[in-house]
Image (cartoon, rainbow, N blue to C red; front, side, top):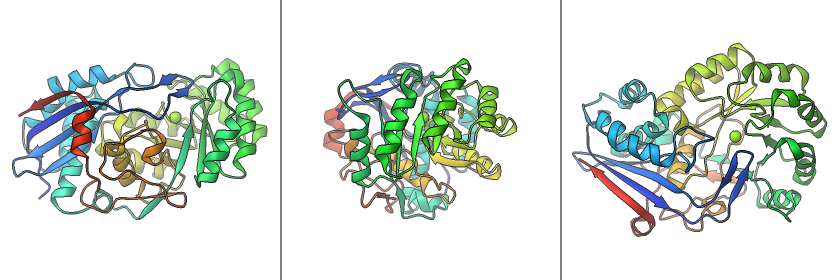
Length: 372
Ligand SMILES: [Mg+2]
């Protein structure tokens, strides 16, 4: 019942219209193509997956173009090459065969889990042992565009009902941005995400943030600087979380061994899919780390996948989880993901529980490829 023998995989490169550009310390994300995959078995069961690669390297080493090539040249042929007893076996196989391209592999791997859950008529949340029917929404705000006040953006997010606000910071204006955000947030937890933009030589600027009463500082230093993160933790009251550093299961062991963080952001799309993400989650919980789901400006497909994982016990701090409309003028789904009273419902239909609007998918597709 859990076996996977893929018969056909469709790849779509889609261009959705963003509501506006999103600015972080690592660059600006505007309109970008997004890779979507749909896997099929011989009985007509299907599942959807989304690749989190961005247009340019930086945040991830894989890009939309490299992932597209890796998918049709490597990941899809590997996934179609044999029958797997269950999705864990597919995960384990891709984790070795496609270890250089975990971001591309995750799209197919996650689609396969969706397919299995759909085939059984169960929601993916139920399949994973999820316990929540809705999860608290967390808004992530980019660096304010020239002429706009961060406080205004934060106030709007607070009024909309978000349970957590994440701001982006960079060394030159971290203190002013963080102070402005915490004041405007009116008691809602604020996370300041530096995206690795501080050098360990700028530790004093991070120490200044301790006065601001942030809930977390996320990824102060570059991904590999775990020793510096650990030293920073010793000098700060504010909790440190890591995101970019969490790029493999081994990395989680190193973070734990070095006491480099009190919390981590788990992104299944970066770790190679759910097989690794579930292991990451178990490792993190065993080590007493706070975990949350990290967003990558996904379409509704990726968002629905994230909701299934966020429904597990232990995802106790609000992740990057917002309704479709904050990023996209029109999402790919028949029904956009909505926020109600600061929460987003975990879809309870089969699989990821959402359906793709086929007409909109066709209209948004700039390149399509089918592997059979
Ligand atoms: Mg982050």
